[in-house]
Every structure is written in structure tokens, then in C-alpha cells.
Length: 334
Ligand code: PHE
Image (cartoon, rainbow, N blue to C red; front, side):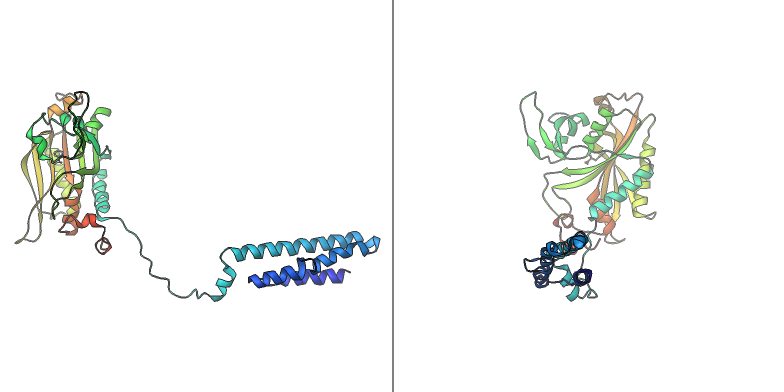
């Protein structure tokens, strides 16, 4: 008897099942009503009493073995017919072209800017893109109805005449984040505030309806204009290299006094020109008062730079719209 069971066990163990047909053949040969395992089970009753127990145990083990083998083969065939694939695929063939993704040039530029300011001890803060009139204008010393508000062609989301309701705007600059920061934290403060800003300007190679700025704010006792100049010069040299050609000239913003702008030379000696990259100045005492910081004790400097301008200069991109088209032929160059 044990010869019979040993032989059957070996047969089942050696069976190869790689196709659906083979799976069915296996089922018919062993597990169906007329299959060998089933037949053997039927014989248990006719075995001599002394041997019946041992025989029954063996046959049941074989039944388990056949069932497990069947189930495993069935599962494997169901999961994408891997057995048959492995037999036919040529794994030495080169793969189809795989293109790797990369960071957008604006993201790369922002990362570079952040690195510079991390080294100078600035932290990063953020604020909302939908702002109210107070944060975008009033607290920044833009008088009501003053033409300075027109400096920044504003997208109004809600214009309200009600005294208890503020106008809502898409922020025209990142300076409102200065206000939010000073409202929630006491000096000393040293942060940069990157983000998207919006302006209702006609779209050209040099201007777009949305762009990115990085605001900077440093408020403490005895912060001076000399420190601002030093910081800005260090910044352009760290981004563009020591030989960068820059100039700083006086300017006007309602929220800084004095105010200045910084330009970087763009192009070669003969055909190049100055390109403005940032505005800056000493935080206006009225701005400090709006957020309950005493201008007699504290002073500060602020700056706001355009990320697109800085990227365009760095990479030599001559049309801002390229940064928003998502054309792979352009993006793959970075
Ligand atoms: N917010 C100004 C702008 O968008 C830039 C600026 C920021 C100027 C901080 C001075 C100080 O043009």
C-alpha cells in the first residue's frame, strides 16, 4: 500500500503547471471524482483494520498536497500569467525610453534663493493669496483712494461699499505677509516670505498676470540701511557670482522710507541693459505702528524680489511666458 501512496505523492510533487490546460489536467488526474486521490480515499474502508489508520492518514496528506498545489498554481496563473511570460519575454531588451521628471526652473530658483537666506539666518513664512484690503494696502501705509494703490493693477475679488466689509483682492505683492508676521510675532524677526502674487497687467514677454515674489523682513533694534545694502549685495553675489554688475537706486514705496530698487545688468557689454530685480527699503514707521511695534525702539528693513526676473537672468530666458506654458521642450532644458 505505501508503495502506491509514495508513488502518487511523488507524481503530484513533480507535476509542472504553467498553463490553464495543465491546471485542468492536474485537477482531472488527481482531484476530480475519478481522480487518483479521490479513488484512493474511497479505498480506505476496504483496507485491513490494522493498517486503516496509517493508510487513511497518508491519503489525507496527499489530498492536502494536491489541493495546495492546485490553489497555488491557480493563483499564480491569475496574477498576470507570470509563468508563461517569464518563458517568452526577453529581459535583456533595452527598456522603452523612460523620461525622468525634474523641478521647474522657478522651483529651482526659489530653492537657490532660500539657500542664500538660510545662510544669512532667515526663516521662511507664508501667507494667503486671497488678501483683504487691510493687509495688502492699508497696514502697508497705502492711504485710502491714494493713487499708489493703482501702482499695482489689482484683481479685486470683492469690492464692497459696506463699512463692515473689506475689499478682497488677489494679493498684488508678498508684503502683506510682513504684516501677518509682525502681528503674530514680536521682534527680533528675520524671515523670508515666498509666494504667488497677481497683477492685472497686459501679458508681454516681460510681465505676466501672476508671478512669484520673495519678501524679506528684518526687524530688531538698530537695523540700518547699511545692513540692507550689505544683505542685498551679498545676495546678488551669491546668486550670480562675485562679478555680477548691479546698481542700487532710490525709489518709492508707501511702506518703506527711504526706498530703493536694485538692478542687475542683463546681456553683454554692448547690447545689454539694466533689469530691475527687487524693491527694498527701511520699514516705514507707520507700518510698524499699524502692527503695534514701537518705531522709537525698533527699526527694520524689507525687500521684495521677483522670482521670475531672477530666474530669467540666471538661465538667460527672454520671455516670461515660457515659464507658464509647460512646454516640455523648454522644461527639459533645466
Ligand atoms: N512689495 C513691493 C513690490 O511688489 C516690493 C517691496 C517689498 C519693496 C518690500 C520694498 C519693500 O513692488
